[in-house]
Length: 201
Image 1 (cartoon, rainbow, N blue to C red):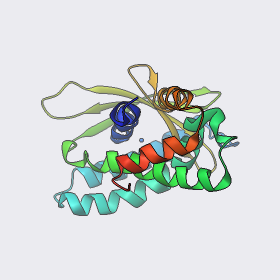
Image 2: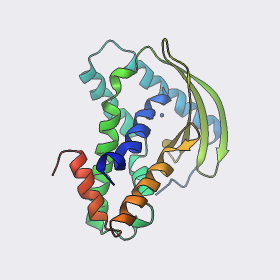
Image 3: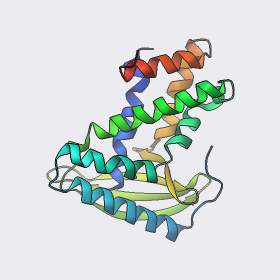
């Protein structure tokens, strides 16, 4: 599988984090807590994206905001699936660092596409993975987008996103599993592919 194919869904899923304008945790928030979290996090994202600042300034503000409110490390472990257990501690550490950079780079690359947006919280329902919060995202001269964020943990964080009925982390785990199976289950091959994606060969 080519690297572009390997990372395509990660990039699409990462970009959809802006729709929140979005090891699993053991403590699940209540519906009200999840709503409050999404309203706070989403409101901050909207303020940054709709501001008059330069793209560079927006990226500078968004990066710590995403790291504080999205469980990137937990999503990364989930995406590696059963191969997490066969990776060495050193490989686990390096993989998570690379996964975070690939995910965040993909988000940062699309900052300029989201301006003058607004969000509306539609519904919140509990699930085994956490509270599922459905949002409607509106952008000028474009159809509205429906997106569901899964909120879990203490403090609450985004642990997954659903777009068009598909789970971002489940889709990415399927892609990684396919890639690693084709490469003899060697986690190092995935690490090298992610390094290549980031230009760190």
